[in-house]
Length: 275
Image 1 (cartoon, rainbow, N blue to C red):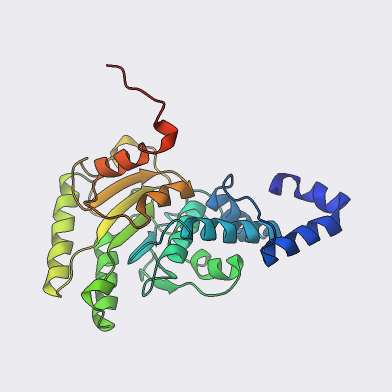
Image 2 (image 1 turned 90 degrees about the vertical axis):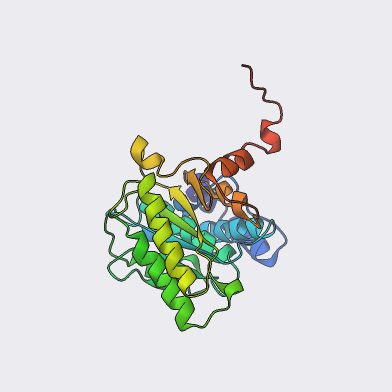
């Protein structure tokens, strides 16, 4: 619809306005399956936001929410030096905001941005532009420090006297896979063990981690952990459909388990492996 927006409004402005009214009233729906989250967000950040984009975003959130929720999840957006209206930063912001809207309390509407303070933002406002404002204002930098991020989560939980069942269960790390002080593999094992010990000292289980690559194409960055490593998953790309893999997800989280879930849908039923 965005592609032909100007033509629609030029030749049938009243019809377009009437359609938007019907969508807001629930009598019509606006398709959101074909649009990627970062496309909507990038347009909003560049001042090209319109009514159709706002309604598409709401439709996207409600459609995914009807399939399930994210329990005790939070996203960390590492913007890595590029402007917020360009990929991968726009993708990190868009997917981080989407995850925050699908999360349940007490972490609903919360997003961590990687900057000097590792800020924990509370998403506010009714419109998409209002929700994006604090995230887009963050000064990007390279090299996310995961230890600092997990320390922030733990400090917030301790200060808020959260119960064990309220602690963050899963952290989505939306980044270009560049992290301070390690290059993946065995280094992550050591990092995760240090995180686990700090959380255990306060009576909490360490959160699972979903490394979501929205930028890097290098082979080293694409494989920071081994396939069978528990408590971690790897996904890549800009699609909101990847979020579906984690809605109400239970069981042991590993990279290979997430891969198996991703290819177990009906779209792959007709495929056969010939060896």
